[in-house]
Image (tube, rainbow, N blue to C red; front, side):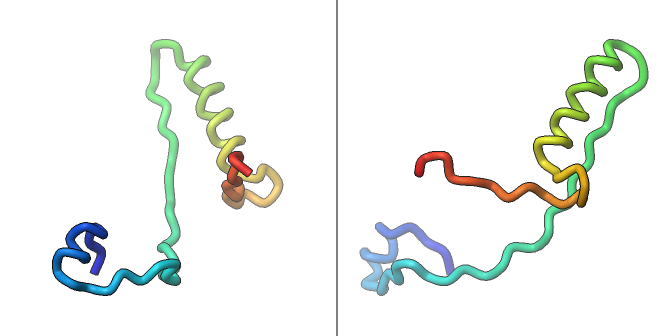
Length: 69
């Protein structure tokens, strides 16, 4: 059960640091561009988003990196 540290301490529960978390389920997403308007601009934007999220050759999600390191 996930609760805040404050509530766990007030209920005399043990807080487990660095707990191994379960694997998250796969995430699926799509980008839709509607007809009309500034469609060319929106298609370019959707292509840029897809390129940032997916590896073009394998069509697999790009791994997130920690830029603070």
